[in-house]
Image 1 (cartoon, rainbow, N blue to C red):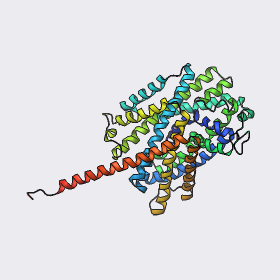
Image 2: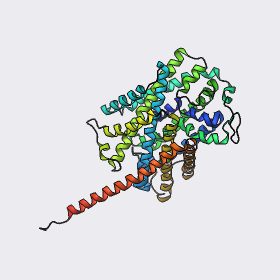
Image 3: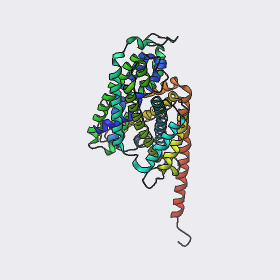
Image 4: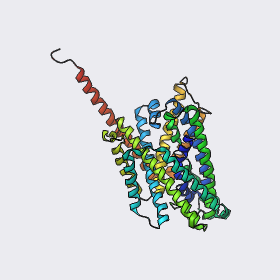
Length: 441
């Protein structure tokens, strides 16, 4: 139950915002199909990663999987992709928190985002950043807010509200698919909002009891809960508030309640629960990107400064440096574009991790596997293909941001790999010279 709750806590922010951006191009029908495709992808993904986690129960997760199978080069690219994913996640969640907080007090300001980054950085640096049970409690409050929200709007549902977007000139356009078939593609990255980061359960295998048994069960339980929320939210919300009103907003639940005439205490409760849930995800994202940067620095890929810790064993410099980049990204306010950056990084890491699952089955078939993925390589191949489609969809949804993210990861990997190789060569040379006999010998 603890692991399943952890998986839900990773994802809960996506229930409050992010998914609605897929309505702009896909309409309700396109987003619904995209959510179904994303759910199938994540089911196959977590089953594949569960096998890898049982073989290599390491907190490094994707980086460790890639290093074991493909070596340090692709491992670095995977680690950087995961780093980008979590840094962008913190940025986009900060934008959403500003929107929900602004709806609560009536004022939106840059100071909200600034105070959020500064305050949570100080909390992490003080050494309480690993209080994950607190995050689970906050996620439970967020889940309760979703239930209250759904109970408050279901009686306002109208099928007509699902078809209020004007039709485009795209092929296959209809009232249910106003953006045509292409709209489904461009909605795909936003359909992942209901599931993105649930794979983090696999990274907890190192600390789980009887991981081969408990981790897959926790994944299935988390996916069941998340799938139920996904279907309810993507149907009742647009059906009560209208699709057109939700396409560009950063606080869709507040917009739906307002348009349905459900203000007062209900609006306040859902708003507060949303801030709590988004805050928990922001806290977790900051923890994740600081530890990912620390791991890459300790491996010699990033500057050694980022691997230094304070007296409370917190990688402060990694926290501050990556946090500064995430903060600048949040100040752009381009929530939909930053969301595409996050999904692009995630998709790239999935491609390598799933390829590692497939290759390990081929080159080491006799390797002890405490847990075996149902369907074996067929399951990982399906998830691999869907991840590739998700990456392509990111380029369709926002070509410039997706291309910039992919290019930055590839170029950074090449530069840092070469730098690490030169450093290792110099270190090897120094050791060789120190071990040579002196003139007296």
